[in-house]
Length: 169
Image (cartoon, rainbow, N blue to C red; front, side):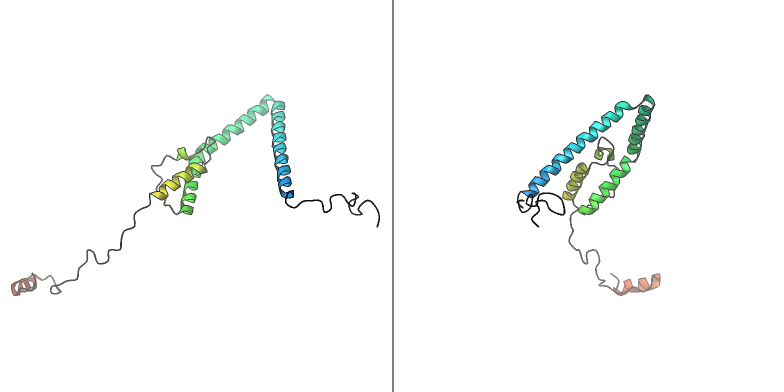
């Protein structure tokens, strides 16, 4: 067909075909994606600001109560979340962090009450350096084979006979 437009899209047949450089296409797509994400974040912020401006006093009070409830819940459960994160990162690194009784867990929480992965990771790395020393196998230490006679009973008469014969000491 000698038609100017492509039958599938209605676009001119020679435009966009074979003109894309495969080396620059991914960079261009990445730049376009980044720009679109930035625009979307900006639009979300504007939408939230507009929504907040239109709230009535009662709706604002409800929103404030929800935010306070979130903070209270995170404050209450934050230490449990920190414990779980410490144990998870410790297990992944092969560090025993089972004794958390005297550890200030709130120092591992961020301002919003959630676990701070970077602080926890730094602590785990520090603990990894303090690994317990490996001791050599001490086979036979503390146990010695008997060189004397075998004492089969604790009868005082038998023991006296063994001592008198010189077999005991």
